Image 1 (cartoon, rainbow over the protein chains, first blue to last red):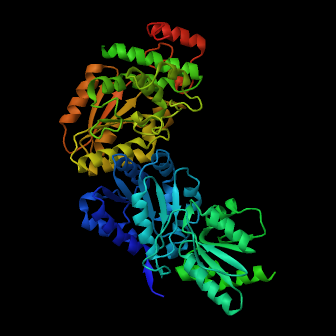
Image 2: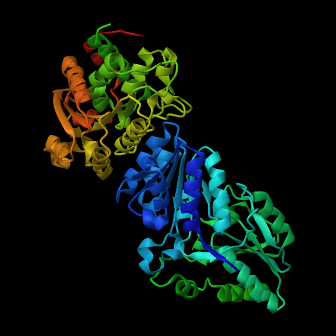
Image 3: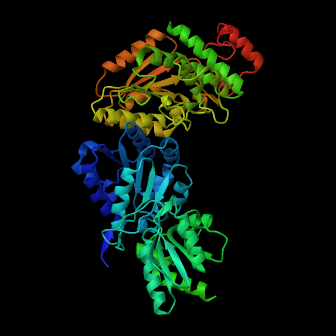
Length: 309
Length: 271
């Protein structure tokens, strides 16, 4: 499986979008080398603004620029975009429905060695609960491309969370993201995993491990966290006995929370896999996945014990 | 009509609305009236019929709690109807407790969480500079509001981007909810602070129309740096028993107080 870093794709697509939309502006808060907005900065220096280490001002300036009819892509790390500047996102961007696309990087455990202070496990919960805000957690580099092209065309605020490291490519180049739609990648029998972000690839791996033991678990990519694909979730709940949500985010308020909110009272049992109600730890991303039992083997074990009960 | 006369009417309707609503912020609305009236009736370029006109001058009321004064000005401009004055702070009204631009786009900015307006103004001015537009962006801040850290993030960035078409106005009425600004959290020397951040600073009497106009003209002559006008004002200006009284920051007048205020403001206008 080839790999792509979502943030690298973001950097490249921004330049493409810059060529298509002369009114597209990018704003960053001193992390352009990490969020990869630097490519846009070099290509379109007149349309790129670095506001320094000032996330509140980052969101306010973005809102102001957007108010004049421009498309604004705003980037910093997930933990700061959602938490540090929550009030500015809520008041200056979401309430008036400004055309600001907040594309954050280094989401969840992918902030890795930087530890708990940099790891965002609450960002989707925070952003999802703001009216007018749409939330997307793309599952691979190919989807990132499609998501970005899509949201540039849809007016209003978005929150997109991207991973730091290179992650496996799941979708074919022809894949097209549709807001509010999940994608069934693989059907199963005993249950199905609904995953988002980089956990989709790990869910697929877990599913492969389980199939070797004769347990057939499907995988759905649910990158559109808000709006979530209510109809698909409803259908899956009728089709499967077990639904496993899988995310590198708190099991409170993220994908698992979103599924729980729309899951009809049927036979399907929801098991939420993700970060428990806790802060993170320091370490390499892969180490942390094992540490929090969110690697493919651990997920396979958890699913196995659930379906075997 | 003379600016004084418009200000009197605006003060009257500001208090009328707040009294009718039974809540609101009279003190900081009244201190800002003369400046806002000067902007809307003498200085700014805009089209009442087209709030989205891209070449308009923008007024951002960062101290959103003073919005009754803005609504009273919108009433003078015909944006708000007479009967709407009775709906301030009522469910479904265009006259929300703090401005909502989705219902009232003339307000430019949905303020209410203090400290955010200047960043927004920086974005507006920056975009104007990119597009070589000649519009001005005016941002009115409360003096207490400048205790918010975001204001200074915005201050730094306005200087970096050389936003000479950005004009801030600080309503320096010296009072905030809990007391005097200098006892709650000192902001002085406020003019020096703005100068240190690279802004052009002008200090004026915020109730003197020619000083207000003069300061804005001077600010417009300035190039490369943004301007902050420190307008020394009186909280509750225009109603004797409200002037410099901290309790009228966020308390509506009683009906009896309103009757008294009405007389001071020239009586029975508009009823």
